[in-house]
Image (tube, rainbow, N blue to C red; front, side):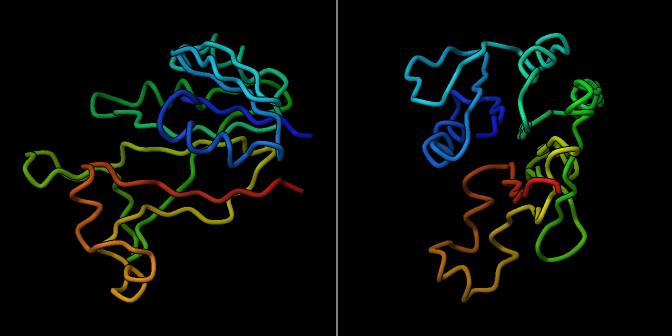
Length: 177
């Protein structure tokens, strides 16, 4: 059974994904906050992945890394540069998905209509490019979806904007051949 590293595993998305992946993969969970309710097939390693030494430690021996985060690159690209460093011979370096809005070529993931700052790409999904391939990736903006599709999915046109100034980045992966 392959081992996947899940960073931010104590957060909302990690908590949701853990049962979905249970039994399909071994999970190495990592976060700066402890996780006490480990399930069969899960191990926990406490780490701050903004530190390269911690990132190297938690990725050692895993088959794949998928990391989703608001990297808050407003003041510069240092966090992204750190995460894109080679991890080891097996993993190589992480790569960033290149999601676009469903409606076209825009790639921003943050927008605040009341802010003087322009929409920007602050949210990233990084992955092990040697072991995974991106099948699909997109930025979910409910306003981009056709009304019929929104209705079938139970979404409203303004949902994205009302829920957060950040838009979800969705990525679908397959194992590399």
